Image 1 (tube, helix red, strand yellow):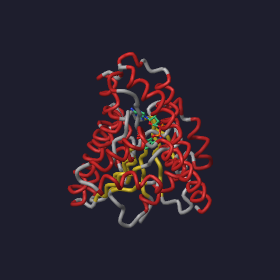
Image 2 (spheres, rainbow, N blue to C red):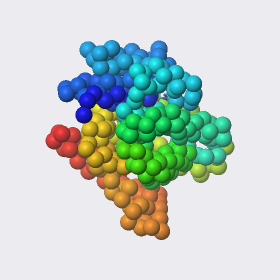
Image 3 (cartoon, helix red, strand yellow):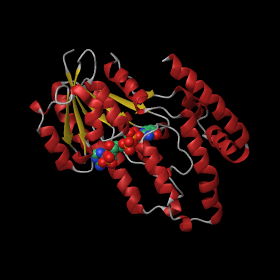
Amino acid sequence: MGTRRVLVTGCSSGIGLAVAARLAKDELRRFKVVATMRDLRKRGPLEKAAGDSLNKTLEIKELDACCEESIRECVNSLPDRRVDVLVNNAGVGMIGPLECQSIAAMKELFDTNFFGLARLVKELLPDMKRRQSGHIVVMSSVMGIQGLLFNDVYSASKFAVEGFCESLAVQAMKFNIKTTLVEPGPVVTEFERKVYEEAEKMDLSGADEETAKIFREIYLPYSKKVFASLGQTPEEVAEQTVKVITAKEPPLRHQTNRLYMPMTALKHADPTGRLPLDTFYKMIFKHDNVFNATLGVLRLLQRRTGKKQ
Ligand SMILES: NC(=O)c1ccc[n+]([C@@H]2O[C@H](COP(=O)([O-])OP(=O)(O)OC[C@H]3O[C@@H](n4cnc5c(N)ncnc54)[C@H](OP(=O)(O)O)[C@@H]3O)[C@@H](O)[C@H]2O)c1
């Protein structure tokens, strides 16, 4: 297989930045990376991470996932419009009680997380079909498999992404195009910082007192503990994304965090949905001591696994 051109979206920080830099520095020089971001003024950290690969195996271009013209302009600027691998990574988060979130904000989130993907695939799929080759890699989330308290809208957007890819994958296969959903658990990036910052200043007056209390006093501290115990680095997710891209037979789904798998396995263990529902309910509202202790054990395991890698 010759050099493959990989277009990555959302490379100003976090996972997108790490994936772009990792691919560009590939020892076997298997990739030409088109690292895109919506605001080129934020290119500094990527330039630094790319180091010597900048303008050699990595070029930076503007692309706003919410704007069809911006996507077309970027793709048209590439030789033969050729993109062998799309890494659809751009995404935004949202947490909090539903009563405190506006429909406009929910639509905005879907515009990036779901319609951003739809726009990119619409632009690239016809060329991939003509060439009878390509790989669509999508940064989904474990929340695209299992919904989580106070993540209603974000999780819905990732479910949309999962349904879209699962449906598309069958047709894509007929044209020799591969589809992969990368499903990270918590990853310590700007994403986490941004959602907590917004949560801290969120106006909770739209919610009743009990809901506001559950969000502030139970959900937020728990969620922070989960990030601290189970959180991966963007580099770890990037490493696994590269494995998926270079696999001979890429999977449709790839979860990056083994420690998170028991949570998602509950869903498949009981088609009625009762098992995950009861487990999450008890974990959050009844057995918080057990939950905290489990997180402590998982933190240890995470450190050990990290050392072995
Ligand atoms: N962090 C986690 O815990 C986690 C877990 C599972 C899945 N994910 C997914 O991983 C992906 C990357 O997230 P991250 O953790 O790396 O967060 P991040 O550091 O906040 O990066 C998000 C990237 O998306 C970009 N972006 C947002 N809207 C865009 C748009 N309209 N057009 C182009 N780029 C846009 C951001 O650009 P700006 O700098 O311009 O805003 C930024 O570069 C997301 O899809 C997220 O849902 C994250």
